[in-house]
Image 1 (cartoon, rainbow, N blue to C red):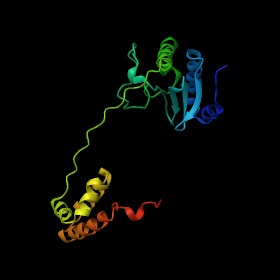
Image 2: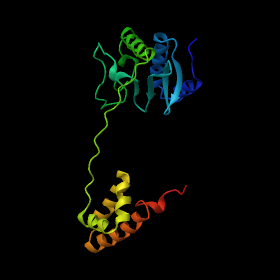
Image 3: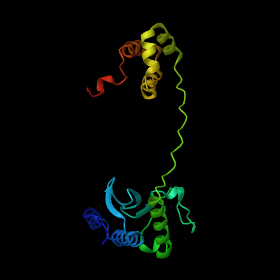
Image 4: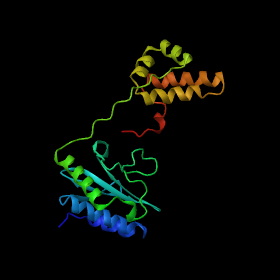
Length: 205
């Protein structure tokens, strides 16, 4: 017997009428292709795990369903059926409005088996390349003020990019020079105290 989860029964029952046969069909096919698949709910959607990793997932919306493989990026896709750009819907099969929108059983079962083999072999998705951190341009007036207050300058240099950005945006958004200078004075005072721009709203630990 497949390892089913009653929460998925509930999910299907609450889905739109058009979606129920689609979700039921996908569910049955996953267990047929991968008898060891385990059902669960993640991020509010039905998922199928195998060998301790996500195998695939499905979901229903108001007018369509979706189905996708967790490791689609490294699957072979010999039939060329994957929706690679993901512009129309999440998953690899675009908007599914009926069972007829899905590939033939033979093809889908082969894909599920490939995904299962990747999990069985412990193959992991390649790490996403780290995007280079963009240099944050500091307004000249703020830079000058920081140089005059070594403590504030040291603290500011150690701030995470998000903290720096908040101060810079606050200062550059000033509509008059007088307002800008006033904000810089306040910023230097707060920064020297190690405070972020929105420190008043931050939860106290």
